[in-house]
Image (cartoon, rainbow, N blue to C red):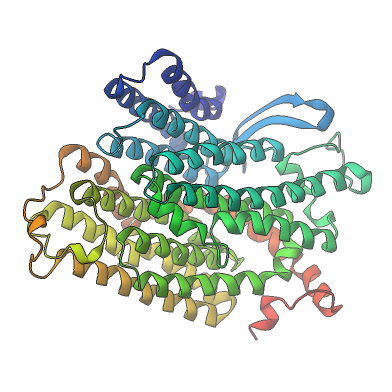
Length: 531
């Protein structure tokens, strides 16, 4: 039924539909046509999501690792090609991006009333940049999209943000730019080492290439010393985007000042680019360095889990609490990814999707109450469950999803990560479990203070419950929470091949890393440190 998907440039269509929509808004709409602009932009996002749905059905679970490949000559003198393709990991992230895009646009209808034309143009451009990052199979193309999505997010925060919007926007831009430049140096190091003729591709053609898959193929030929320094360059770029402790300080400012839709995209998609970078590049291309630096990465992940949870408990602002919860949750994702085994990677990748669903929903819910009361301070509320029963019910479901209640999506991801972490080093799982307890503490405490108790503040007595539009953009996320929580098999099935591929590369290169440790040239690996 969906065979046609393999015979059209489906990925390019999905990637550039938002860009085309942005151009139409720029040239064919006047700035006074606010209502028509937001309806048109939302329609474009909806079309993009509908076009992406066939990918789920047409993707062959037992087929090639990367599917829907598109490859064209671009800058031939440098070996740059326009190359798109997705595996199971990228497929889930593409679908998450197109879905959250629609919901973010819908949530903006009542929240954005000034400079609507520019706002929706930047949102559409951001959508194209994010999709390109997950689809790119060429390092140069990947870097172009990585930088492209930085610009619209800077303007979304800087123009439509809160009182400290310029500070937050500039901080976000500078942090991300520093990481991007270091990542570019790592990409160039790989490229020039390959171009020097010291690597043999075994008949793969011109060694001048930025092809990601070809660098996967020659991972074992890259010297450990070079892997070590390239890994560090990639690490800073990806760790800032995750964000890992201590590179996280831009995130609370950006989240608090950003408009609701930008916070949803930032938490739901942009943070996943960091973890995606580790899974796509660091692990399969630099496996020896991955093993050598494993204890340091895991240590920062565990610190992030505990630190993010403790700081979240001290927050008085709901949005800042959810922002610090992301630091903790993404540390948990990194713990699973760097367990370097099947359960850990499966759980880490699925938890990337779960975090996008649950935290995206939390920001949408905080946005709903902010539009009604224009405050996010927890102390301003209390007892509002009687005034807003539907809102309280959905908020409770998403809260339980965030803390990992069984039958909801968070439980599946967290349980699988703990299995993977325990299989590697038992006390990693113990530290992760501490983070789960902290998560339950700060989320339930916030819920209790906002929704239960007496209704003391008179300003809360006339609060209106969710309207149809708000229900429309919240219910898909609630359905996904239950779907993944009750029947996660389709998601694990689609991740099976790429996860096994990465685990196989890592396991085959572990002896080389052990030799480096035995020679005393690198830090101790996690296997030895856990004994």
